[in-house]
Image (cartoon, helix red, strand yellow):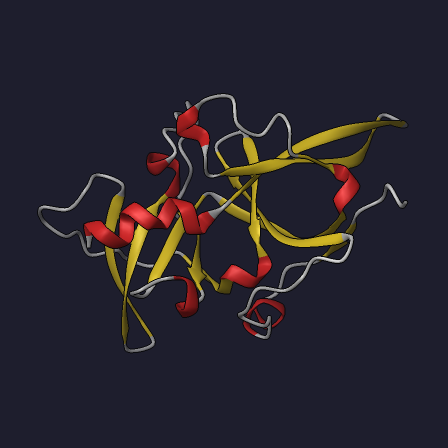
Length: 181
């Protein structure tokens, strides 16, 4: 079993051409890795339609606090969810909107057009199933959206170390969001 991860530079054409259906994972997983505060998170590549740069968000009245508002994305109204707020991630560092990205989710997993606001999107990567720890994924009943912890091998000062990436199930996170809209 390979212990290396294959990492590809992120470009929008890679994401836009991804098939939008569930695929049997035959020993590997493909994810989009992004930052929320100091931590790295991942969602399934096949749940993503595209990644776009931050644009002005129009606020909506009387919606849950984690719904930032809406944007006009090429003529289609898209609801923007602040994933940091939704997951109760508190950071001391202010992130500039210039580095923020919106991950637009595939229409087949949501009832309406939804994008998630993240601090930065870093890569599209493929990992072997053996690098995912499913047992330590959920430490409480509220963390049911966590699928597992991906152990990414990185070199730090000529030593190999594991960088931990929290793999979340965006579909479970969206279940209550879709009913709130």
